[in-house]
Image (cartoon, rainbow, N blue to C red; front, side, top):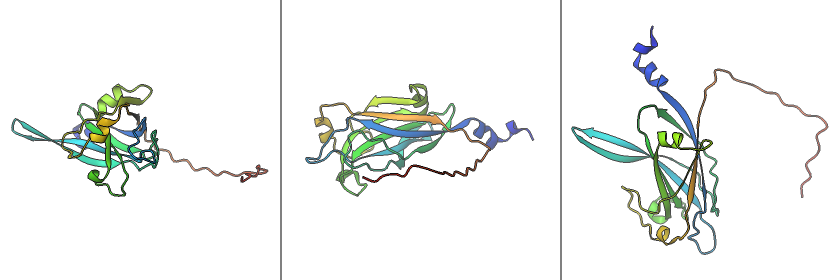
Length: 187
């Protein structure tokens, strides 16, 4: 059967899986005795069409882990996203100082955000990393205070590493052995 006539096959050939990893630099310290405890929430814009009207909503798709007492976090959790060619997929990255164990935004301090399309992240990146300053404004649809973010005189940056994931039909198994290895000395 010709794959071109199969719509599922066409969509797969017009999509690619990308991996996103995030880090930040120069985050503000809103706490008196410690640095920020940053966590990033990632949203995907959904557009609903009704006649000539378009309504946009932002759907939370995932979040990073929280890193305690760090103003230059490197988040370890990767995010896999399907990138559909010729489709605008807007992403929003919202950074909070998570002083509370609760994910309720009102109980934590807003730091900033950025919005970019997945295509822009890919095409505007240098060596697979897109860099920009975080906006201190409140993104549309979120009901939060940005008074602490506005009081920060510095510029916080976000680094979004984005790479295409290549699937391989091969699996590799390794057996590793060692002899006469130096002993690790505990201090």
